[in-house]
Length: 179
Image (cartoon, rainbow, N blue to C red; front, side):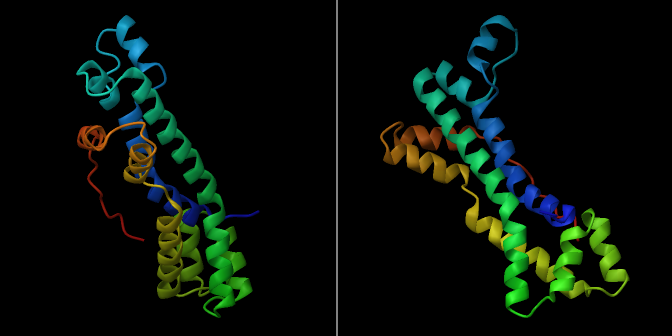
């Protein structure tokens, strides 16, 4: 399936924050054991919560596994979102099939700009496609907060532990880069 790198990249950015959160919350594989052998290593949010006694190592491992599973599911969902969004825009009459095919074949942001410059699509239409894909991504991405809520519901961690994990997660400043 030929997928527009531009929209796929934008969709990847939408879940990039989740990936960073997973890395920030979960640390790297074996962070706790790496901390024992490497000075300064293993300083992830979870390992610090284990060290502080807020979480057990078993709980930290379960949180990490759940976050990684959510990240993997988000990655798989991302690959199907754009083609589905384009099909929806064609069905609604917003795009022609030829425009949809051109967008799917576009090479990144510059490819989309080329489509606008060449008159294949308008700037407004390009923005609508971007918004549609972004909106679709929001509906399929499982956020870290939802992962923690499911762990609380399952009895794996308590709500206060979920709150501590959430508070320990690194924050990211979101920078608008434009279209």
